Image (tube, rainbow, N blue to C red; front, side, top):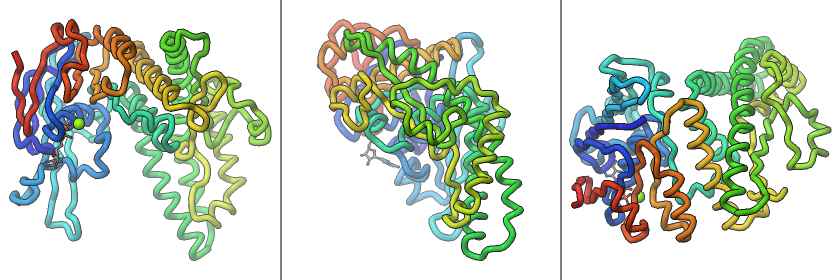
Length: 404
Ligand SMILES: Nc1ncnc2c1ncn2[C@@H]1O[C@H](COP(=O)(O)OP(=O)(O)O)[C@@H](O)[C@H]1O
Ligand SMILES: [Mg+2]
């Protein structure tokens, strides 16, 4: 898969950008704060339906447009080609701020595919990317929600039904929590919860099953890559700890060694759904007392283990870095097997973090990608033969120039 053309309007510091993107490796070189990351962010947005680092879509709209226009908007338009289907798709995302709404205004998001307005959720699965970041270490060292997001973004791209279940689950969770809060504060009959329980379990079971299957696949791939990278015998374990676990009873789970693989992917969906439902019923009084949903995929955890050691707690920086690299490379392979296509690779200043041999290893593994965008402040970090084979663009103050 590749993006042949990218057009940005008032996206971050790009007031206007029209760029025909080449296939193969493309190096974006430039000093800090010139717009390298923002360009990757635009492509990532098309795949993930969200930015990887903005806390609100409003931040994506150009500052000047926000100050001077009556209806400020940011627009990303891309022409994407999928090998299997040669006619390119035209994808468009518009983020429009209506400042007339009290407070901070209201942001509206519009998605168009081939010029036709579609639901925002229909963006899922249109473009596939894998993003490599220097602070990917948060996947190992950060909070459980960082790890869930990593998995959700990857899964949502290859499985639009997952993206839908996740989005529905989020809505149901918010409604259910509001109701629990109300019951906590004002009391009253809790019969209305039944409806939300049903929905929560329906979408929750799908999420759990998909996560279990994806993590099992990712683990197999990541483990082999990890063994390669460390030239060792030890693989990498991705241990899924769902908040509601259809396999291990809570008592048993406590005694379960961390690195014992558990096969959850094979549990029938109806069984997961019924089990989660039972759990919700058992904890209803506690949930009302706390005014929140205490169990479900929004509380899932994933742990990384190498040599039986939990990297989040006991790993060294170097070990965590290697684990993350193995995981990201596994994500690429996993997407390839799931979609039959190379995802578009986005590497934001990752080379500076790696030693020379890791750099070569990474570039060798990714060199065959259909399209790979790499940013750097320093071209010298790349081996000369790689630079020779790549297109090199200079990025300066939101403008792009091809470098001869
Ligand atoms: N909404 C926005 N409007 C205009 N400029 C922005 C906006 N958001 C960020 N910027 C500016 O963009 C620059 C950062 O661009 P970035 O793509 O991160 O650069 P690089 O990756 O080359 O270091 C900063 O100077 C920042 O102030
Ligand atoms: Mg940057």
